[in-house]
Each structure stands twice: as C-alpha cells, then as structure tokens.
Image 1 (tube, helix red, strand yellow):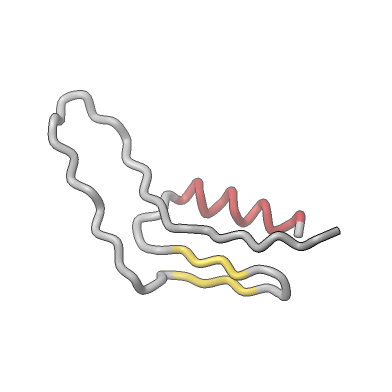
Image 2: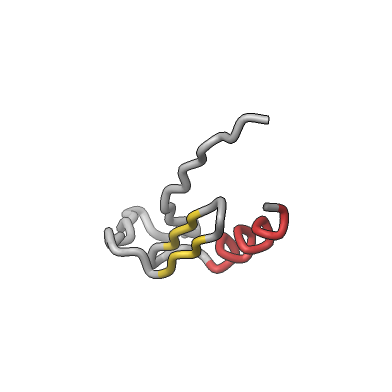
Length: 64
C-alpha cells in the first residue's frame, strides 16, 4: 500500500458573535507552540489552536 504524505496546517476557529460586525483575525506565530514526532508522523500545533482540535488529533494518533 503506498504511503501518502499529509500536510497539517494551522487553523484558527473563532466563534461567531452576532453582536460583533468586525472580525479581528488571530495573530499566528511562525514558531510552533508544540511539536509531536513519531516514527511516521510529525504534528505541529501553533498558539490559538482550539483544545478540541488538539484532543481530536491526539485521539487520532492511536490509529497510526
């Protein structure tokens, strides 16, 4: 089975506030806040990542 190289990019999720008309984007740093390396995977988290995203990725590591 061929190995597919995956690229994980940082994302920022913002809750939608109906009372606010202007959205200020989060400032992302080019320096990772956390990096996880396994034999087959390299995962990088940046500041501003929602905790639920991190938990989902960590659960997914069980299937590697």
